[in-house]
Image (tube, rainbow, N blue to C red):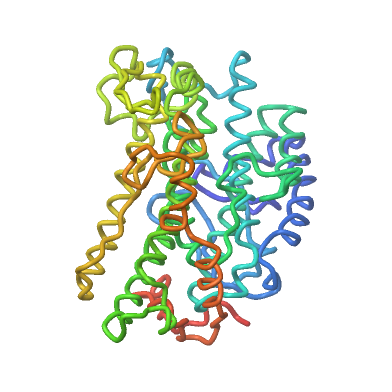
Length: 470
């Protein structure tokens, strides 16, 4: 068996799991607990339905996926790492140029475990957030895409659980169990990161979640794919391949919503009366999910981020593009709030690594927003442009949390914010309206009236294909 081949074990893998009987038994004991969690917290009402899903069959770049109907509890979740590179060295930090680690350095054990647990916790959280969305799917195509996202998030959980079981002993096994015990939005046992406790009530939430929150996942996975701990790096490189589909669902989903809105604007000035989602409401939901997702990068000034970089645990997005991989020289200039005024400060570059990652994220998000605005223009809408709010807007992490800024990033008082909040973020009335549109449409080839059909189907199939057998 080559490293690119998936085995036929009970747990599909390309890590020779059957050669380590202790580890194999431990993961096979974790499997029924995982399936219990999936049946309780996975997609509600569709566990026995046949879904046209993509399943990993290898990590080869020339084609790693197989499409077929499968019931979600029978999906072949597994453990896939990209093949190791001979002679690979650490690409950044104080250990730059030294051989990568295939075992956990003792002094980094606790920190690395926390990084893996935090990444792992996001995966089941998003499944929990989205578990009721199938009941209001706008088309069979969308229903299938939701389930594809869900099963791949489940597989990404497996990737992190494998690392915990393999390299962290009893502590790792306990952490793997805890990943199945926390619940998104639970006041007593919430998920670790704030955005993963936010309700995903409707499909506009879902499209913006997969656009912005999964895009944060892309940047975090790229940073971890640089890790000096090679099993983590190799796990994340394969996860990035799957994450691309999640962002595609979000980016094209929003594009389809605004396409339909633009079509309705040619017929009426009141999009809501026509059963669509008006552009100001889309902007409010965009503001919400973009700001929640920005928080996932952590504080702008962070000693933890500096330590992660220094020790070789977490690099920058596509580290190879930088000339200086040690980052001991140079500063990052950022505005900080002092006495109610924004003042420019120079921060040592290592302490600003979260902000460096956030910069790349914002640029990537802007590219998608520009594309949406081109869609509006092509459909004759010239008086409105969607826009990203400023990075200081609606922040609950970092140096801007606890302060108030408008979407242009200007400071404002708490009283001003309270008066104008519903201009910029979804109000209760906005949610009531958007939720009222969410009616399930599952006849092949049909789509709800608030969203346009996709330009093409999945894996060469037509939009009219029976993607979920109901």
